[in-house]
Image 1 (cartoon, rainbow, N blue to C red):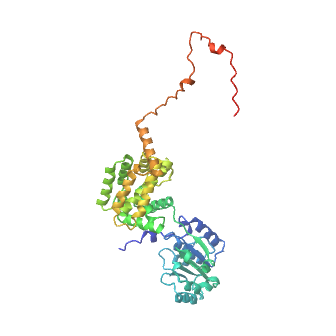
Image 2 (image 1 turned 30 degrees about the vertical axis):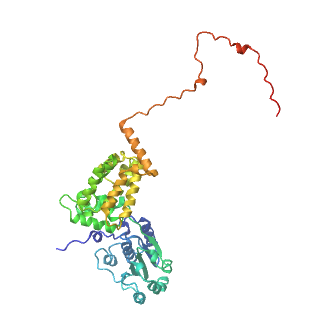
Image 3 (image 1 turned 90 degrees about the vertical axis):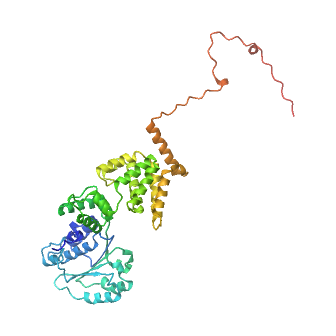
Length: 435
């Protein structure tokens, strides 16, 4: 029995409506197809695994559909069946890998074959993948053909680096930039795929899969395929995803954050030792710690961030984040995140990452040794927290007493005796002699 195809091949979209996260591209293309205003050359650019080649194939299917002009291929005619998922392919739709066919000779060969009419379709479509690998000489050889192609010819260039396509070619194409897929949309898409596959997945594991895919649909489906292959009767659990993807367990992150909040150096360095003893990468631990500190900074500024979806975490983890952020001050969290980010940059290429991780933790633990503004603000945060916890009232300062000569005379019951000096007439003072 043959093993099934990879997820990203089994669920490759066949219409523009199935392409997720690229509405700014698919809607204009559908309108152009429906109105029969298709250009002779297109340039699809964007990160890997975001649907460039898939959209190029869908565009070729829609162009050669028997019901054209149509926004989406019908899927019933011979051309649509040939170009469908798992179909035999069409002789009139030619995919070229420019990484191995990007020279002048390849461009000359393409130019000679392009003038022949299509065999059984309306258009002959060339899909040139990794177009940035075509040499400048190869592009110049194709320039005249791309500028003034025969009526039956269409070009679709797909590339991750559009800046490497020479400007003369770019100016003759319609450029459509693809984007990374938003995490929330990708999470719901993965949930639907798991339901189709009949495998349960823990909601806490979905953010890890999305994070590993980094916004690329193909990479995310590859990661999910690996997890589905190793899932047991319980499905894809959070522990399975954490172990296979190499992320730091949430228990370790909770432990080190609580130790930072309490100023417990023994617990912090105990966690570092546990990270190294279990074979985890100190760089990955630092990256996960920085991500946790970033979440805490956001929760400290927006307490309802987990509930509103500003942070993609599960419900119980959101409650833990709110409780942890309450133990820090905003300046203290910001300073810790800055130190972690600087340490992560210094760890790249370092020969002793554990040493740098321990020094990083020591700097976070000692705001008293930091005489910069961040250190002073962190110490103020700690003092405010201590005053809040102990409930020490603010001492009241008595108003200062005026000097003795300015104080009003105390009231007396006896009448004051008349001052004989006050009754004497004042004698005029002698004038000062002239100098």
